[in-house]
Image (cartoon, rainbow, N blue to C red; front, side, top):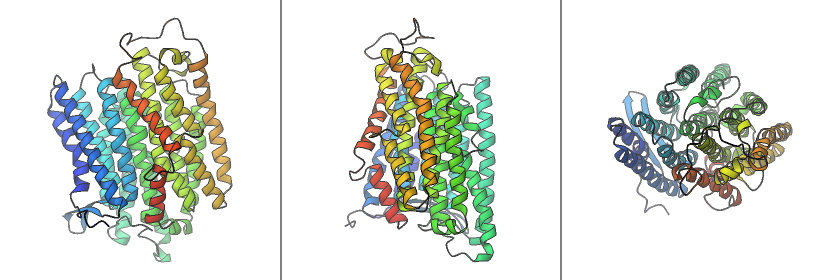
Amino acid sequence: MTDWLPSSTLLPGAIVLSSMLPGVFIFLVGEESHRLRTLLNLLGAILKLVLVVVMIWGVYLGQIYESRLVIAPGLELVLHADALSVLFVTLSTVLWLITTIYAIGYLEHSPNRSRFFGFFSLCVSATVGIALAGNLLTFVIFYEILTMATYPLVAHRGTPDATRGAKIYLAYTLSGGLALLVGAIWLRSLTGPVDFVAGGVLNGMPHAMHGELIAIFVLLLAGLGVKAALVPLHGWLPQSMVAPAPVSSLLHAVAVVKAGAFGIVRLVYDVYGVEFASSLGLLTLLAVLASVTILYGSFKALFQDGLKTRLAYSTVSQVSYIALGASILGPIATIGGLVHLVHQGIMKITLFFCAGNYAETLGVYKVSQMDGLGQRMPATSLAFSVGALGMIGVPPIAGFVSKWYIGLGAVQAGQYWVLLILIASTLMNAGYFLPILYRVWFRPPPAEWPREHYTGGRFETMGALLWPPIITAVLCLIAGLLASVPLSPLRWAELIANREYGL
């Protein structure tokens, strides 16, 4: 059936380079070369999307895409496409294109745009490299490249707050990277090269090594948990909200926190194997950390007046649904956690796009300033409402599908306490989103806005800022309403569970 699809060793590398090379050229483009910079951004994003579509179809039909580069005896860089990597690559690629359009409008009159878009492209390249990493060494390398490429984006504004937030981000992520590196080296010393293999490469390891393997898991989980914002390793995330809205969107929906969550899934399923991890008691540890993070993030969000800070604590909570799904021994919960990788991304990027629109158009940064926004910015506010209701888990938006599957999986596994976590979190989700929606739609607007930047034109704000959240809000609805159609995020998560993990 796949004879007509030639085996490719070039496609994985081409997908990484499709954003890396434009990023390198953008560094060389002068600040006044706006059109050339925009052209490079969009061409790279579109080319990546085309290449990913080819990969999706090939992987769906069972085609193998893998590139190997020997850098020293026993050390190989491996890019490999499986169903799980394609899920993450597709999310990153689609949202990168939309975020690029948004960032072009958002930074239209800002300084240092070539520097921003250069690191922006490198950040996405590192994320795609993480997704396509075929072994632990490759994963660690791209994981650290992501840290270094994101730091200048957080510090982009150059203000004291931005510099402080970036330093905090770097301190956390470098410490996490060190833990990940130590764990990876320790594991390699026991087993040799660690390729990502469905079912795990450590399954069946002798009992004498179990103590070391538990310690290694804790180190690797700590390294991944920093970017995944697991409590108590989450402190960098609220501090990084000083970054521009496109960076916040990238951190929360496409790159950093997703890289951590994706790495946890790889660790559980492709390094240790879910059955072996369960036998060592490691899934219990992960479930406890994920549950504490879900409840803590939701609770902290209730008391934040800064809109982006409230959304940041929401991310702390919501990303841990992915880890929670991975920690429940059963196929349905696995599917729920995997599909939330996508669903949380499109919902959260919608919310951050809208927060950026409010700030750039009207100077609204705080929840207490949001009265009557629905009258002044109805399209943006409608998109925000879709994202917020999806985060709560209101059907038929995408977030409902994720929570439903995680809950069903918990019942299937006999872990009924997970339902209490889901219920408590959902109530708190409603507690910090519904008051915002009430302010936006049912309170009268103020006599004047804090700082109105956009007063003319056809739309409520410039088109480059308005259309991205509308598109992603529509995707939130489509992912929920059409969850059962072929190649939907839910169906692809089922494909991963069935093909990669034999669930």
